[in-house]
Length: 181
Image (cartoon, rainbow, N blue to C red):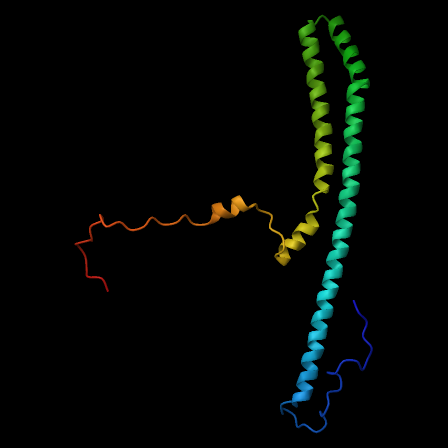
């Protein structure tokens, strides 16, 4: 925000205000000064809003960059542990289930189910971090400003009313009822 210095605003001490009676319309030059001051405030407000949006986008890009890195790190963790230590753990589990008298098929199926659950957990965590990279705050602000639309063009076309068919000459006029007004 910009700082104001007392006395810079023409509305604080309007020209010719001592000469006017209460309720009398201001002079033309005073009105122009007021309009100019309001225009400057509006422009300053717009510039400040643009700066705030730029800061928001910068922060959103930083968050997206960080989330992307974290998501890739979690994906790497899932791959590394899924490919090395998990194979050893499942081999040991299969051997344990075999020693309890279960068949190979049942032992392998149980360990496969456990592997799928852990893989699903890792995939869920990766999707959460990739969702953080979606820049949702910037999208909301751009949508509020009317500069961004969440829907695609196909969705917009589907919401339009279908065109009415042209009237045909084969349709007979209604004979019952009152006359058209």
